[in-house]
Image (cartoon, rainbow, N blue to C red; front, side, top):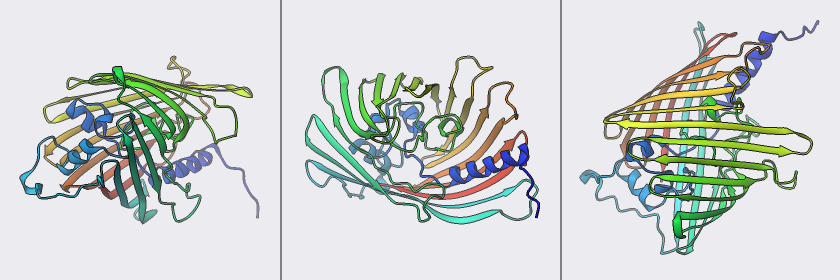
Length: 373
């Protein structure tokens, strides 16, 4: 048998397949900037982590109980479950289960059709006094190691808070303060197509910041790699403003190593809510010159049809530097219905279409159940 070398198109197709598998079978984040935009609040309003996602505080729990609204619903007023075990221990739990199918453009049959347990996390927050909260999370391991990666959520940090000027200090393993913490972690702006790290994994280090009613600023110094693998080498920072009129944030990432050039990224995001409509967008790049920058962006429009029902349209874009060997411009279009029929139960039904410059287009279909508690 004669083995022929792969063509450039075959290399691209292999990379696309690998990316799609990683996108479909990776644990997503739980933070929703949509809700922050609607209410004009920072992520810390609902979560212990200043960067949002994961363990919910009392306000976040009640916001979910009221089906993502500030007002209580009489129908669910008798739901009296309380994750606060006592004055200093609070529990959290979430699980996500998905049906996923996909096919190439023009194909009559699905190339993939499967059920998948995406997420399962047990969380605990311990607050021995008003200035300290310790948060820990443990998550499931994907049944087939390495497909694409076994994932265990190992969030574990101490948060010192309640100081003057809204200052806080976070020490341990946490998510980096970079960019917009979307619920859709498969956006090109969140993927390793552009980012030099896995946005779904925590890093170890220290973060300091201040989060007021509107303005916020955060800066982190972390390993940027596995512990003891090298000297701590990563600086990340974010500044921004959150209000009912608009939300905006500017982020920077820099990782320096003695044996390699610096790696840096920057991000600019914004959102606004007008009546039932919310618009969100983000741009991420590794250079301020568009002609030489690897870049990604997304725009998203959400319409609140009714309490507990959102209609979403989204476009993602990825583009390499000008003059790249292969024109790897990718676009992805999403149409989605997001339903919350009862407290702590979210259902998403989605259709996504990938449009590639040099390969067959791809269609994906999702049905997802998410139980955040």
